[in-house]
Image (cartoon, rainbow, N blue to C red):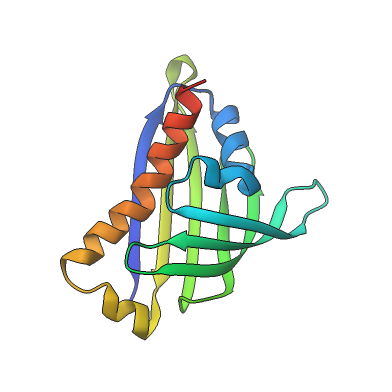
Length: 149
């Protein structure tokens, strides 16, 4: 298996700045991001934001640990890149586009090479389910969290 790539887009009844604010609070994202079980901040940037974190995610076929480095582009989004972990490489991002009436289009994207061992578990129909689980749960989780109040 080579690259696994997926994204999920939702429209959220909340301003772009608020969507960014919640997504950029990486430390508390397990509260609403379904597959993300643990986040430990290892390093912070000059603004106090999570710069390097260790995460534990439930990828359906296996729990996956990663060390991620974040970069921020307020209020348009944020991105991350794996520094080390159980996949060969991993990148991800949130992008926020302002719509009318204080609504936001939020897109959560992931690209990874899961490596040989994890790649063997992701063959066939399970690959699509894992891609949907990882991206949909994050995007829909953010939407639900923000629209609940």
